[in-house]
Image 1 (cartoon, helix red, strand yellow):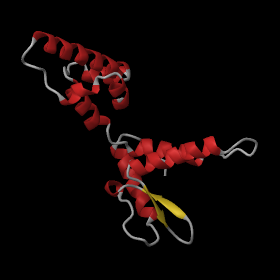
Image 2 (cartoon, helix red, strand yellow; image 1 turned 180 degrees about the vertical axis):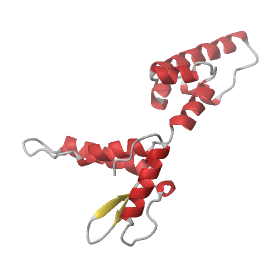
Image 3 (cartoon, rainbow, N blue to C red; image 1 turned 180 degrees about the horizontal axis):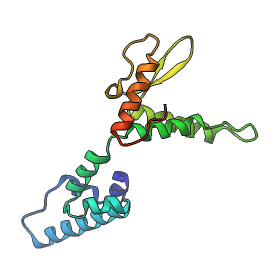
Length: 163
């Protein structure tokens, strides 16, 4: 969304305050703010639109969204991992698009704080970020402890533990 607002020439509104002098400057700023708020709102689910409808500046909306939706939940990371594990590299066509998609899944998981840590032998295991009890050492991971932490976190987020 930030890239889209930049492309539309509206991202500057996030970091500027309304000008106090010049009627045209204020009008241009107000118009840009309205366009940016409209573009953000159009890209939100209706239930989230309701939550930000009372906010009047791009900064307020952006900060609200970042605070409430900026950190991916363990559920979304699990869904991303599931998509990663379900991928098959095709044998009948060029593998480059699939490998690119595979790398994007790894990048998403890395960006959310998950790590791929060495376990026994040459295998790697996915470790949750430290706030979920991630890699604590280079030894064999405590899978039972991680499963318990995953279940507890899942329950706290209102999901149902599947492990």
